[in-house]
Length: 602
Image (cartoon, rainbow, N blue to C red; front, top):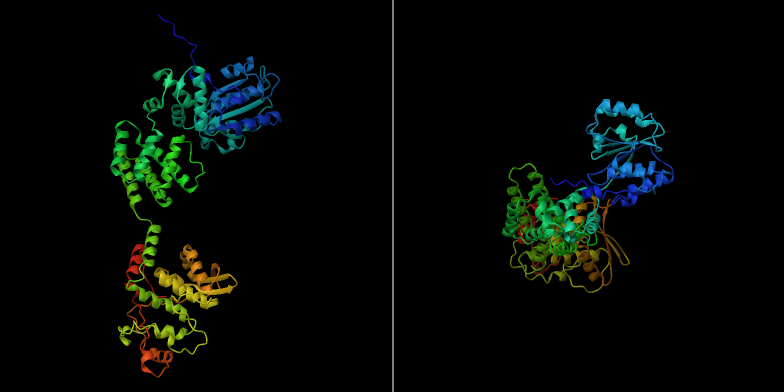
């Protein structure tokens, strides 16, 4: 019979940290404990909190060695000293390691409470280390309270837990709490390569990275996986071996699936999901990895220098390329849809079906037009549609704000003339003679869309620029009609909205550069445009009327005669017919449909 060797130790035990220098990824904890020992500021109770495999038990044993080592307490101790070796092996009479899961009753705590009064046998302190302390019952915690708050000077308590929320607040308040973090992936990968070198194992960098990523921040899990891989592969480990044994998803496969979604490749994405499902891969894990990948794409899109997570150089390049070909709004929509799919898959018996539905919805979201696309399309179409029949309507609308500074009463009443009062379809073309009609006002109105000539200023400048903008971009009509001139001093030009119409300012601010250029063109020089929301302005009355509403004929006759005092009959005819049927404009209809809006009376 062949004797069984008892000298082999798994990597997790063989390469357990022995000193503070050996603790990886927990610099904040190590530095605090070192300083406390150096300054003789030792607490009577410590609580180590963190996920599995992050070094809670190892750190507790190292602290116990530092407290009870010869000439201690000292952070610089010899791990090969007999006292330290006894602590590391769990044989020290002065360091008692208690499993909180199996010794969680009040009777065990009472026995512990009775033994704390005895002095240590050889070291300076009697140290009680309770692992998984959250497993103690409420009665056991209450029995420990008084002793924990005022222990004898020679007693130190060290607790460790993965679930601090289950510990009574009265216990936590009596301890110094240290939160151990998940160990970074690159730190784990480098340590695995170090172990492989020590053991004579050849492991590729990609394989070490895949193991470290699958360990999810736990060094012990990573070492255990490396042990298993050595048993399976021998002394040479590749990334394919890691993916095959543990069912992990390669970064390239995740990047490929993400690319299929971004490229609207429905059939390719479904084939990829089917291949992973047939290969026995966990679809929930695949979806989580996919969401994490899109998170990296989003961070790269918003901040190219931001932290995209722990990924290899090849995957990082793929992420940068995908970020350049998708906008942020669509990317957010895709992540939201995948997150909703993840929530449904947790309780769904058919996970593959929900995964496929979520991917198809994400691809459809990539094909949908966003609000920004609609605004850009309508604005471009409006700018290029100067020869459409809707243009005269826009011009007539643009003239109203300009003439408002000269004859507000006349314009207001004239705009309400019903279509039957002055049908002149053949009089519209000869609109040129209109400037020849004498006006009794001292300040002439600037015609809409007038060509820049002599530099203008003040309110006349704003009226001219506003008319030109409305004719060029008819969709600006409502926003610009609500904008009011405020001041013009030097190069500083200010327009404003009343507080009640502040929402127009938000819409108009996206085109502030276009407005500034137009105003500067009519001012004959550089202009600093400011758009304010002011409490001292009255809300502008927007000329939006229903065609069914007819003004009394008595309100129309007098102003029309005053507007054309020339005794000759010919000049009175060219006055353009007021039109309120702007809602029939194709561009207005398209905008109302795109934004699900409607026109209301002011």
